[in-house]
Length: 325
Image 1: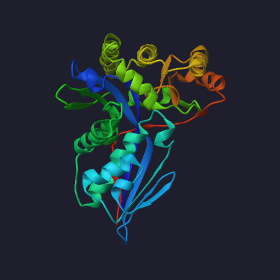
Image 2 (image 1 turned 60 degrees about the vertical axis):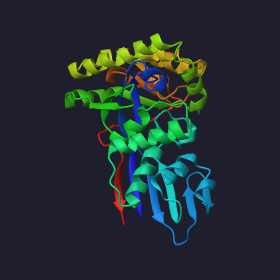
Image 3 (image 1 turned 45 degrees about the vertical axis):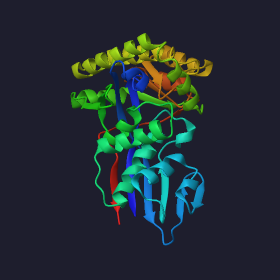
Image 4 (image 1 turned 120 degrees about the vertical axis):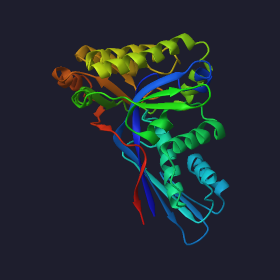
């Protein structure tokens, strides 16, 4: 049996510039971090040639092509394991189809690829895992998504990602003082809105609008450079203000990025003392991230008392194998 552990992620700035339609003309940039919430994938050899896939439902098939779970099916095909195996996954947070905004589907795919390679006795780099995950989600399945989630899950940590026209990706850790990182973690609050978003609906429109929104995306990319600089300088209040600016820009990318309910939550948080924030992922629901100094956090919690708060901390490692037997 092999078990992989792959972190979920949150993006701070630049989301949307990781689409090929954008970065093939001008490099896209994203800053984000992985967090201590994980997807676990277990793979085990079966006595028979059947394949079993276990998640919110259980599939039991003879032919790999008959697997309904498209991520697991394509991972098995790419790695070359097509019979006699069991693949089961679970997560600390919401399953991928719930639209959490934490990059769950890519974490599931990266973790599955990692576990399957290990099952075959193959060592693979984070770059290979990310590249294979992008190949499956974007090229094979045609999902309307960018590359940041796959690279975040594979590499882990707080990183500056640059997506280049030649399809290469620069992964540069954001290095800043430990005490600043600890303060930043304390000043970030995460709340579940209770709204299950359909990221594909939002992202299809966002992808279609890239050319029209190119100047907006240019501004969002510029924010990543500002964010990186202010993290290094330890100016966290400006970090919060940049989150707010980025959220205002992001709402212009597609019509369903936000809605009146989300707007009311964000306005209440701002009125209670939050400096900035954003809906994670494509938008429309899932998790609301807020930057708020400790002196105002209880007021923000009171203003959002109907929402479930989710404490978290930054994770420095990407996908890894935690059990081999």
